[in-house]
Length: 504
Ligand code: AMP
Image (cartoon, rainbow, N blue to C red; front, side):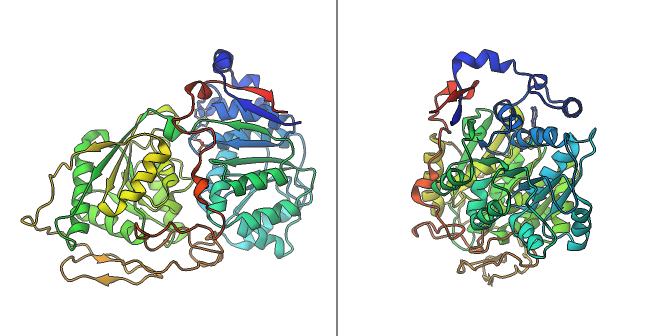
């Protein structure tokens, strides 16, 4: 028997009244939720928690910002509260595509289990095996891991997965992008057939559909509207920009970015600036600091400890501007970001949705401003097609750049790892010319979760005329961009409330 949750206007009222206390969660979990200040469950929580507590498999189609983490952590810890951990045999497993996301799930776990005695181990790169081994040896209730690191532990014979009762796969579409699907399939095979699976993905690419058909049994399917595309609470703008001369375009673009930041004034309390290339992340951060803006870079070539320290400063408000690449920012949960700037149009339209989803979270207002150069126009058209709406054009606050106003800026970038850089005579900033996409093995020192088959953060953007390269070496097909039941084309009633219905 298969269940599907559908949102209908008729049930709006009933479900808008859903309370956490109606969901059969353990009293100690309810107390922690109250401490967190949550008033009522979000749609993904109200939809996923009841079937999860009944022991059913769950397929949650929801992206970050919808409260999806709590939708699997809360039922999981309620169920775990009923048993005890055994040495080397974790009872539950959460798989996340990146270290940051895994660390964030671990934080959520700590927050919601504050009144319970449950143990966890976080198996991610950058943490010594020894430390993780001793936790596993003692016995943990929950293992939170990136797939590669989990398999490394397993292969070292330190871990037995035959007692896993609940397995969570978080951000499966990211796993696909990063080439982790074979690892996930292998891990599924190492856990008991009888395990319960809670599976989350923002979109349902055909490959994801295949995995869920293979490994999930009659799942309750809960689909919530994409916060980013449905959320009218994010004001979206784009500035069409063309440099006065090719050799000045880069510094003029950074000047434009500063003008856009300035124009926001006090409204900009904190913001994330996304760049497509790691080298631009460094250059933009350096340039902003030079002009007196407080900014720090975060990307996959930085040491994990440095990334953590930067994130922590950003979270606690010490740092106002984070300049980030897509991969480094993945899973980043900062509820109160007021602004997202896209220094470039992302090469994959879906990344636009993920990027702007960093603002306007949990019902707050947010603003997203993007710079689009002529070479980005194809990608820009893809973005507008995906979100099914026109992004409002902003005038360049500086006017059209002219050759008479030479740019004085001089910022030197750190020489990037694993990429060739070339300094131009007239623009004194190191610019990285497109280089071939390199394979990045899973266990490279700086970023162990990097994909096995292709680098998720390319050093270079594809030329607009090129066909889009596939990510993860596997199946990102043209029709992968289809958003199932999401986006603005979604009838508005769908986002209102839901009901479980038998799908046949
Ligand atoms: P997630 O989608 O899991 O990344 O969660 C996004 C943010 O929403 C996190 O900061 C959570 O702490 C917050 N959150 C989760 N559930 C609720 C809720 N029921 N009410 C208010 N905020 C929530």
